[in-house]
Image (cartoon, rainbow, N blue to C red):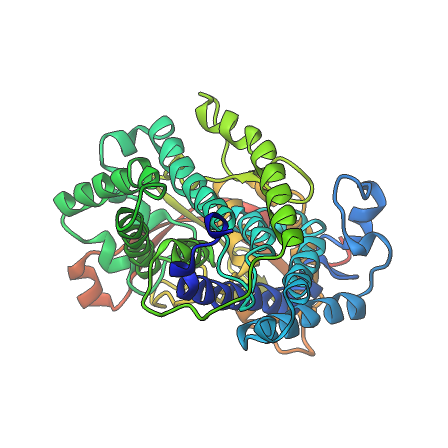
Length: 468
C-alpha cells in the first residue's frame, strides 16, 4: 500500500511525537502542582461539587466515579510518568497496537482532568492538546512508515488553528484591519514576558508590518500546507518562525509551542526511513475509520469559521475531538490589574498597614520585571487578568480565593510568589483594588527603574474578614 504511507516524513513524525510528549508532560506537571487550591477537595471550585451537578455524558471523566486529592495527584503524576516514557521513545519498542494504546493513555488521562477543570481549564490550548493527542494515537511507530491520512489530519488541525485565528481578527477588532493592534497588544496581553516591554516600544511602522505579516501567515499560508513539497515545508517553516516570534513577545502557556509541534510533521526533515514490513490491513481500516469520524465532526468548526458570528475556542463534543480555535478577536487598549492586599490591623481603615500579595507572573510591583513562564500555565494569574477585564469573570472563584488568603491556606499561597504574612499569622482583612497599568517610557525606566506605572481606579473587592 504505497499510497498509504509517506516514508519521507519519518524524521518529522519522530520529532513531532517526542515534542508532543514534552507538551503532555508540561500539562500534567502543571495539573499536579496546582490542582489542590483550584479544584481540590478544599479548592476554590471543587471537583466534587462540579460532578454532583454535571452528568458524565456532558463531561466524561474518571472523577465522576471517584475523587480525592490523593487520587487526582496519582492520576496527574501517572500522566507525567507516561509522558516521560513517550519522550524516551518507549512507543518505538512496542508492537504497533501497543504503541497506539500507549499514546491513548495520556489522552484519556488529560481528558478526565480538562472535563472537570471548569473555568481553570477553559482555554483553547487544552482542547488543542486533546485534539492533537487523539490524532497522534494513529500516527504509528517504527513498525510502519508515517500514514499520509494522519499527516493530513494534523495539517487540518494546524490549518484551523491559524486560519480560525486570522478570521476572528479580521471580523473582530477594527485595529487588526487598520494594522494598529500591536500599538496596544504587548502592553495589554494577559501575561507579558521579559521582552514584552521592548516589543511594545518598537517603532510603529514595524508594528504595522508585524500585523500585516500575521495576516498573511494566518489567512494565506495555511492553504499552502496542502500544496506539494517543498511548498508545504516552506509554509510550515513560516508558521514556526511566526510562533517563535510570539514566544519571545509574551507568555501564552503552551499555545505557541503546540502550534509549532503541529507544524513539524509537515516538514521534510533529513533522515532516511528504514525498511519496514507492509502496513497491516487492520491498521489501514482503523486509520480510515478514525479519519472519517474526524472529517464528519469537522462540519461544526467549518460552519463556525464561515459564520459571521464566529466564536473562539469552542469544543463541539465532550471528547474534544474536533474544536474551533482563535485568539485576540478583540484587543484591550488599557491594561487593568487587580491588586490584592491584606492587613493585620483590627480596623480596615484606608491608612491601615495594607501589604500587597505578589503573584508569580501577572504584573504587580511596578519595579518587578516580568518573567518567562511559558509553556508552564499559571492558571490563577491568567484568571486574574480576566477578572480585571470584568468582575463577572471572577464571580465563581474570587470569593473563595480571598477566603483562603484569610486562612493562610498553604496550597493557595504556593500559587503565589510571596505572601506578606507569616504562616502562623494570617491577615485579619483582605481587599482587592483595581489599578490601571501602563509601560513606562525609556526615560521613565532610566529614572525610576520601573517598567510599569500604575494609577488607582477603584475598589474591586471590599475589605473582608474570615468570619464575615
